[in-house]
Image (cartoon, rainbow, N blue to C red; front, side, top):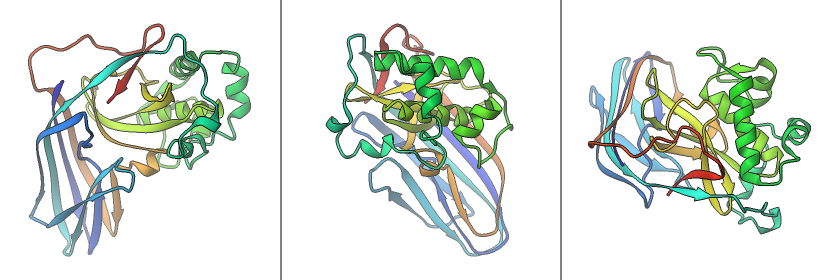
Length: 281
């Protein structure tokens, strides 16, 4: 499916600074960028950086003078997904995981799975099918954590979200990841542009590694699972921050949008049904 994505971000700069932005759609074998532009007004030379694991596309630029700047990103992206069946799936032993998967089993800054081990296993450890475990914990988060804009901050972790029982998509994703890892299911953070998200913004959800594939889950249930354009994946939000700022810079405004670039739309999947999941290729 083709989507038009757009971001406009404005900053006030008070001294020489460096910005690293992570707003470009990710290039993958099956997420094809048909066209894109990245502009800075007033003009500043920028350079694209790729993370070691190719899970982020970063744009870095230096600002030498104080003033206001506006960054604009536009792209038309064609992405592909498939429906995966997990009805007869068994748990994969840790001994069989590839080395690249192991970091997504460990506790991380915002996903303290070691602190949530007892909670996760008491509530979901009795479920045999690993896909059903993730569906169950996703439903539990959706029912027990209130989506409350502005409630949390950049320091809020999965452990905090369990305690406060409120947060935004970032917190829902971190809690889902932490509970999965506590159940020995690898999980990673997913950030992207989201079709039909209101109000429009970047959106966070998570992927669980099931049956040798990364399967998408969204505990907020605010957007269709097949209506996302991937920007980045990582252990948690620390790996996928939209902006990293080095210097005296203040963020002032942002506009984000994700719209269909073609007529018609396939059926929307807001939540997996039965044992079927959505996997981005």
